Length: 136
Image (cartoon, rainbow, N blue to C red; front, side):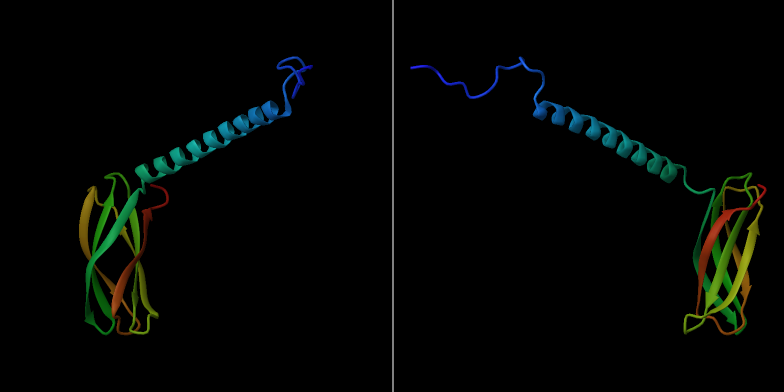
């Protein structure tokens, strides 16, 4: 009896379609992997370098129907002028006051008590944003 072959001899007629597909998948995977690594690196760098100016509200006290004193911590570079925006809200969560405060002191970290004038009695104060002043 004669032996029956199941397929073509290996390597005789070039690469099979499966080998070409495997190579294409490896190339696409390498490109996507490099792109993902670049994205993670960029996001990590942005996270580590952080913002030039940051702040947080340490507390507040309603001192009158038209004023709130806010204790604010600001962290910035010594050479940077920071601008922080605060707003105050009433019991219905409507904004009753908003003010920008500029911090030009040559300190890395400072704590200041600032006063926000309001149009009605405030029940809370919050920090909207802190950023480096334009031109600094």
